[in-house]
Image (cartoon, rainbow, N blue to C red; front, side, top):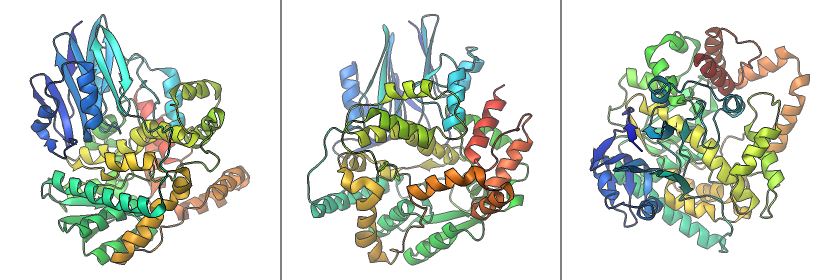
Length: 511
């Protein structure tokens, strides 16, 4: 078997190769030693078999991907959040690996669209499992590795599904979490090597935690930015937080004229391919703010952008009805209701079967979380960091550090529901010391959201549109309108569902 490796994306993070080891990203080992850039190849030296490779992946703490080529075999691995996607295919007894699905499409002529994957993509905004929109082109999943040689062997070195929970007092858990935060942000500071940290500061707690911890640890080379309409609550809260902490704050005001001509812009077209990669919708929420900051040279070119991607691990997504008892059908129902929702679903059973095959073993709520991590968190939330990379910026996701993942993985459900423990520690122990303990903007509880979805079909369109316009603080409507206006067949697409609009636009672009 001939193995061909084609790596093309060097946006933000560069690929490095030495002795047949291809790497991107950075890693802290179990002794807290940092390996980044070309040094990252040294971390994987000595991996000559699957067991050695798996052991290295299990102890790697950071964002990375790795390919090791050894004669007629190869080892491939991605981090626990699939930060840098890797794709592969077999053709005529040869094995091909790339970070760019357009390589398979244009060079190997694998152009056929997988219709089930396309339907799923339009429902969720991403293709679940190992599939992509291209038939016979596959992806490694979060926490997964593969060995190619005499056949293909895939396995997970990490799963978020837990079969037990820690039995500790609240005070003990709080001390452990505070200690973990110190370690996590210490590693963040070490990894950026005195460069400017740029925080997309929202009105929520996650990005605020990053800002406060950097202040606590004495890191002053920080710039915050916020975007949205002039009357956005995000702008109001984030400005107040930045002022309290003494950090420079950039406000990028979103208005209709900011989006003129973007659909035909060369950078946007490149970003749409890079960000989607036949797998996920590319996100536009941050795109225009980062473009504005880049074009105006408001931050150093070697800045590191650090978003607050962690609402997942804090427990915010866990349905109240999922407890420890194994309830497979209930898990599937919740996944379908929450994540297969960008359009009306026609044949739900085929997706129920697919989800059933993807669930791990463990508590019901933990299996639900594991699915969300591998699918929505990895392919939607973390994939949003392509926005920063296309402008040449590195990024970090400290709230996905292994220490926090392991802590929250085994945290009891009573502390996870509604982010009770997470929010309480942040408010009373961390934020209060810096005068930023004002509440997170109430996004409404689950019951209210269900009532809204139920009455939506009965509300006159002009009333619904007026309500949505008032709530459209990030100007999704003018962006979606420009995308729909550029399409040949926009009929029936909900202009207020921005992710659905992007999904349909991208699928049409593949025709």
